[in-house]
Image (cartoon, rainbow, N blue to C red; front, side, top):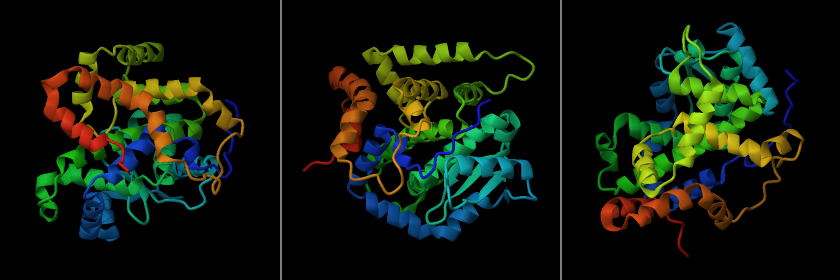
Length: 325
């Protein structure tokens, strides 16, 4: 395969999905958001986070899984990451990985991912998680994981806060953040077929001795995207509202759409935002860009159902509305 391009001094703004930025800024605007972040971070602290996530994991290095360590080094070099986050492997059969932490974020990859994925697919996963760290996602991702892990009702120090809109908004952002980091994953691997194959394995495993066909999977992803009647759209919303990740088929289709836009190739050609050159982007621009992804599909479908889902619509409107002036 062609040699990968080193993306010197690339800023995460170059790949961040507008729906990610819009959802995060909306989340930050919710009443009580700062208080929840402060209470959860204060309750656990940096050491508590490490104890929670690393109680059953091994740290990767030159003598501990050296092949994975070398692959990780290549990913960091491709995305020009100067400070190396620690990488751990935990014994878990599910195909997953996560970037977590408050002040010193780190990456944990499940052993199941290393079993199911080949080397290039592992590269995609590692670059995806590095993308989370470069985008500054880890504080809010850690918060989301803790709330999911413990459950809202089991955190007494959050008693008295109106948490349902917050939970919906947090999970909505969490899913949109995945779309940003999928782009980082593709930039780290620079191989569209391998990236899409990773999504296929996320959805259906490695197939074992049976055959898996990537073209059929991408056709399936297209079917999910095309079917956008009001009722089907609301069913999709209800199916994902409390999920922490988008469906693998949707992620594949969304990443393919980004490739088709030409933005991916432009970055490989050197046309991207460098660190320190991000400037100030008005939040209104992010909402406009995100409207085609979220607003037109989801909010319009909810409105079309009239009073049938008034309570659900109220929660979503509260959670996802833009900040008022």
